[in-house]
Length: 202
Figure 1 (cartoon, one colour):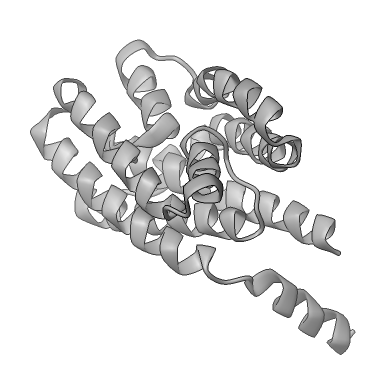
Figure 2 (tube, rainbow, N blue to C red):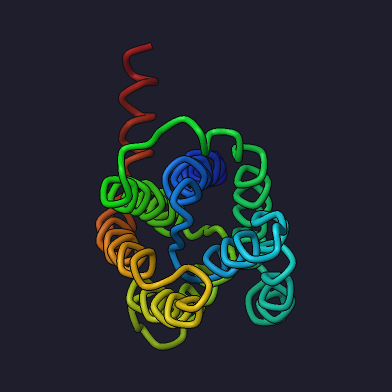
């Protein structure tokens, strides 16, 4: 049952992250920090595929985690692969919505945070910063969401010259919303209860 719940968490969480990135951040060239933020910055500046970029720059982290905690490695690699793939596959949705930069920052941030938090609550993640946050939390007890927020802000500041002040400001809004949603959903395990109710009804 736990494996099945992790699988569902990866699929739903990765889908939420990828849709949030492609449908709400990409149209206004916003970023959400972390490794995904680096992937978006390289996409905006050089035209590189953001999902593939996230996969490549996450590889050294996963090599290190493999020797530290093989179970965590196995839980995380699935999330990384699915999230990276979906970010690139769902890129056409970037033209679906145009609600204005403030709305996109809010909605994109909430979807991404919901996806990240859901995966973290089942000890899986989308790789990169999320995986590092989980390792730090395991070793020190420092909240993974706070660690992720710190790295996100650092990446955002590094990308100021690429996306400009206005987009940096709304990207910061996105990052803060991601943090709030991550904390909210990482403390819950809604899938188990939902699946139990579904099975009971059927």
